[in-house]
Length: 431
Image (cartoon, rainbow, N blue to C red; front, side):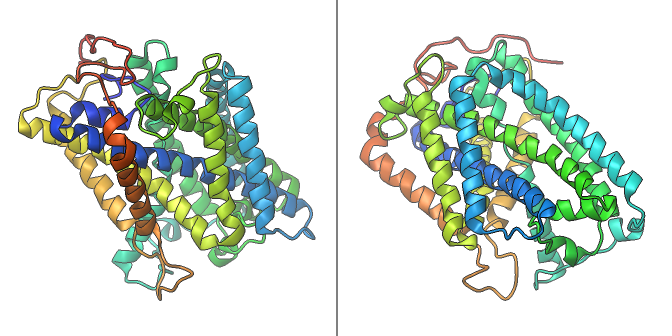
């Protein structure tokens, strides 16, 4: 889809193009809201995680320092401001920093893995890593396994990021899908190896989970290296990745706001779709405000912020599922669609789309389940309520302004949903 329709709107644009005409605009509008909330919540979550790494380093080096929740929020604010400043004043550096973080990511992976394996003298046994099952949820083993899988689902978001930058990428039909595919391959290989390394080098599980730094991976680093400077150095490698990710999520979030506003999907669309020196400054500022608002929830309640983390995943997954559903419905209703481009799934597309839809639907449903038993007001999973709020917002805005003003694509054969006509993809399919 990204190869055939390289447009900043991404998922919601593809829904509008692929879905049956009678419900294309409405479905596209709902998809746009889920995508928007998912991206903004993910940005806030990333800033929160990066803030925890920096604060964890401070606590490790100064054990007398008592970590407070408001410290984390303020550091997250600083990261948000840094990302906004970079996006507004150094927009030309976004491409360069993306190349930098790829090299940094791989180098950090190599350094962390080899350091842990070389310094850890108390490694876990292969049977512990590959066959031992520990269930602390209070539910049965099957339910516990599903809860465990949900943790990995969080890491399988944001693959759509290149699609939202396509209007700023040369040869976007080829380069954007390539970036998506490469991120999956690199992430799968490095992530699996890193996870196995952490499992072998992990000490006591409860001590790791309850570390005073608030960052379990730092406890694994310290358990292996027995060195505060060494642990700080390894943690800094990861913290830098979080800092750069804040830039990327700021760029992605602002481009989605810009694209959605350009199609009159938001209140004050003219304001948020304006561009100054090739940068959607107002969209960046709105991204800052929403990310800070999400982070501010942590001031008052941990449970509330956990819901922000959950809606980040659910918002992405629902926005991923809707284009696949639209593609499948279009196939079985006989709607003629154009998915030609350098990257094509060919005749296997519908089958693979069906498998993807099943996966996304399963995780979207199970992500609303509570993770521990017994369930009370403090550990309850409020993701379903958050999804309901997003649905309510999209419904209210649709009834008040969206159904009259939201344009969607000018035509199903156009690539730019904002009104700039661009002929449909004509490049031959990849063999």
